Amino acid sequence: MNEAPLWASESFWKKTAIWVTAGSFLILVVLTMDSLSKTSAGSKRVPAYSVINKKIDYQYDKELHKFMPVIGEDEFLFGKQYSEEEARQLVDLGKKTTQAKNCMNCHTLLGNGAYYAPDLTKAWLDKGWISKEMREDMMVKFLMDPENNARTYGSNRKMPNLKITEQEAKGVIAFLKWMSSIDTNGFPYNFKTIEAEE
Image 1 (cartoon, one colour):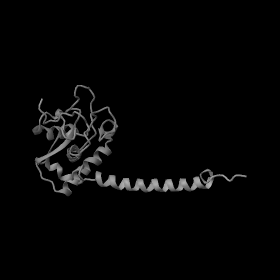
Image 2 (cartoon, rainbow, N blue to C red):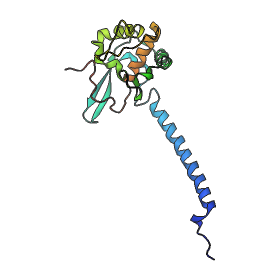
Image 3 (cartoon, rainbow, N blue to C red):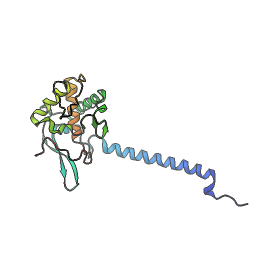
Image 4 (cartoon, one colour):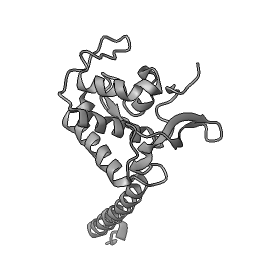
């Protein structure tokens, strides 16, 4: 009687499954650690929080064939220069506010969320804020009282009043400004910023 080859035995496949699972787990751990290092604030593609002290734009890079954030000279948010820790706290407040108010139920942030309301990934740079000089004030007023400061862009979709405080609104704006500085690999495409010439 012929003996079954090794690859046909049950024990071979059990051992193989254990080794493949263990190997896959190790690869996932390495990839996770690598991703965390590349997506943490202060990395090459995700600037430090103090970038909110700088002018930010989003322009097409012909060499890379994609849109890229462009960090410029000083442009202080709310007329104040924030230390890295102060900027982190303000951006963190904004991020937590967007989570607490369930902004992703209607909006998209960095590719995640819903499509009912405008994408917020580069909202700081949106032409809808009319001018750089009016932007901060318009954003604060809109977030605190969206019903009386509606920005519907012709869609008639209006944001409800989420009872956002002035400090929370400033945090959300800091979060949006910081988020606009992130290299999102060209997303969103063909986005015209407040700086763009017609």
